[in-house]
Figure (cartoon, rainbow over the protein chains, first blue to last red):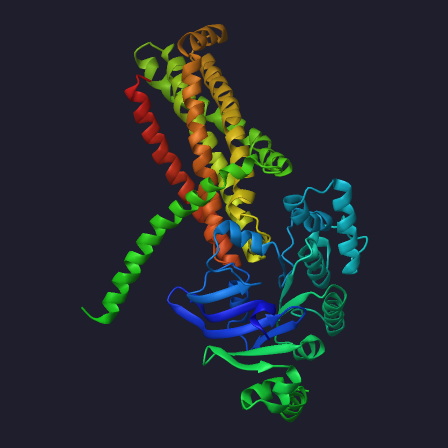
Length: 261
Length: 264
């Protein structure tokens, strides 16, 4: 992948909280139109990495480039302008509880565009339809299920037609059918709009269903231990832990052997 | 000195440093966003009215009752002492000045602390738990501007108005006590309007502007600082109330001292 075409580039990144280093020596690029998954065991720093990439926290060192522009070294205003090109879907949807679903989706449009109320209402309808929530605009977030909240959060993330979409644990707390529906939605967003998607997850079914590329993070070495397509890593990774992590059949066999299924 | 002691000293100074620096940084962030109020859709009217209702309209009954009782209690205590020297008429002076200059603004501030500061901290803390604050940031919207200013403006409008209610009902409380020590209503009223001038009222109400800023900033700061869990939200709300009361009492002392320099 050439540097000019990388939508997102992470260079020598070290991240953490206070004195604690969570992840270090991180280097990877995400190409335009790619579905890129960040994987790893619980507590390895997947969500922390996501929060640093989207500019919520400053890294300890290194750089993050979005279409060649540094997020880390940007001024507050420049960073906010870059962040408006991102659409982020959080674990629980992160909808504003005091607003209806439609008002949530409309928020980025009312804040950053000069569109009329009618135009905004039309875009909101279109985005809600895209995530299969047509007719739910006047509902309050508290009236929606977990899966619906996530989809409403996705509709809001799509409001400004972002260049880069982030998902933090999209399948967490969802039943397999709803989760598969969300996977199909992510694929259709890439196929219809050539969206670049970064997904933080440890759901293997989702990873194999949607990911073009995966990086695996390891809690012990605090860095990336594998980078490639899910199939490549499963079949050819030199790291046994990576192969074992991605081996869904092996996991079932181990569970059966232990009498868990 | 061993490494453990070193580390504890380091942690102590780190803690002291951050507890001083963090509020300053927070105030700086909020102040820096002030110009955003004047851009298109800078002031969110719906939120402003919501907080006006929460901090203002919904506080009227409790402010009325508390200040009425405070006026009555002041009147009773004053009457007990004044009666000894046959100067019951000075109950009017004591109640009038105490309510307008001190107890009206202070009682309103205490009620607002209980209602608003804790509500602000709990609301922002819960938004933090639900990742709504992160969502705002990733939309390029400053949470400081978006969440603090509607609350601040509402408090700046509501608290002086509540003080009017508090002052009036406090004086009415004193007036009813005055009846019990044989001060006729007419005499009580005449004495009240003779001794109290608009400046006295304005100085008292002026305090509430400072209190409004302190209570709002303390409430919001504790919300933003709350850790992202249920206990953290609870602790944030408690800290907001304690910090607000502390700041209000200190500010009241400083302002009263300043007023005394100009003869009030």
